[in-house]
Image (tube, rainbow, N blue to C red; front, side, top):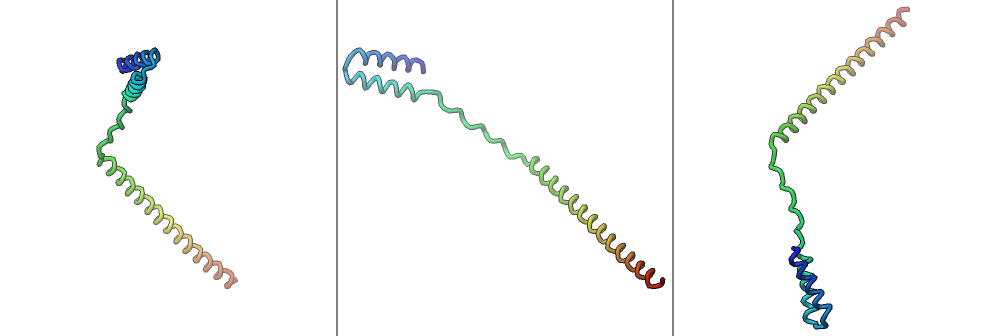
Length: 101
């Protein structure tokens, strides 16, 4: 790359010393070619291979989380039913207490 750049600079010097149009055009073309020969952009990083173990682990954790959430919902429902039954029993006892007094 540095050789091409040196050649381009030498061509530019020669073109400035003489008024020959062909040499000026050659200098411009050499400069353009030197500019285009710069290092190419780095390649994109390689993609990783498919990792089945990762997705199996994510799936198992999702299932376990769903089971925990469903058990928690069942526990809340049992608690709510228990409180409702307790309220009905206490209400019936309160009525009996006030009716017999």
